[in-house]
Each structure stands twice: as structure tokens, then as C-alpha cells.
Image (cartoon, rainbow, N blue to C red; front, side, top):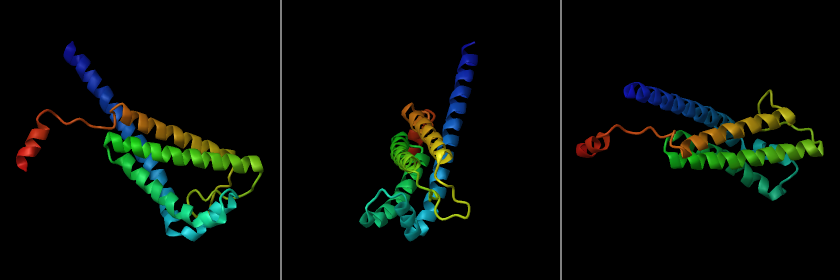
Length: 171
């Protein structure tokens, strides 16, 4: 009976780990897909940032250079598998997403009509509006799930007993 309970517990843990990895891979993919085009065309991204009418002109190019790099670093941290890095990546991407949500909300409130620029210059860029805001809220929830799973130790796959010793002896 104890073996059956242990087997069920292991299956639950494995399922939770797989779900955690799937969420982290999904979130990281979104940020990589968003960052690469922006990093490849910083001038266009700076123009997209200008359209939000929030930042001073002199800061646009600095923001355009920093944001895609932060997105890539956060995505890499999520995929690292190390709980501290996953939590740090989740925190970084969460802060960025909260900032994006605030910018989108400000555009909606001020009634500014503009293209998102979230994924760089694309043929079918989304107009900023409620769907964009809700998409980012859903992304924030996924980031929170990934970071909380890491905090709970789900992101880390424990090594079997003796695995560390075997590795040390090889060196």
C-alpha cells in the first residue's frame, strides 16, 4: 500500500514538473519571440516607444536597447532550471509585464490609437486595446505560476541518491 501511495506521489510530482517546464518554455518563447525583432531594429522599436507618449525623447533609444536584452535575460533565466534563476527571471519578466500593462492601460485611458510594437515591426501588429491588456495579464499569471513553482521547488529536478558522488569521482 505504501508503494502505491509513493508511486502516485511521484506521478503527481512528475506531472507538476512537466507542467512547470511547459509554462516556463511557453513564457520564455513569448519573450524571445518579442525580443529578437526589437533587438534587430532598435530604431523602429524606439519609434514604437515614442508613440506611447510617456517617455522623454532622450530616453527612447536607451529604453529600446535595454528592454529586449532584459526580455532575453529573463527568458534564459526561466529556462535555466535552477530555482533561484527561475525565480529571478520570473521577477524580471513580471516587472516588465506589469510595466507593459501600465503602459497599455495609459494608452487606453488617454484614447491614443497606436500599434503595440510588442513583437517589433510585424505585418499584423496588434492595435493597443483591451485584448492586448488581457493578453498581458494572462502572461503575468503564467509568469507567476512559473516563479511560484520554482519557489516551491517544482522547477528543480532532484538528483538520485549517489549521483553527486559519482560525478565528483569522475573529476
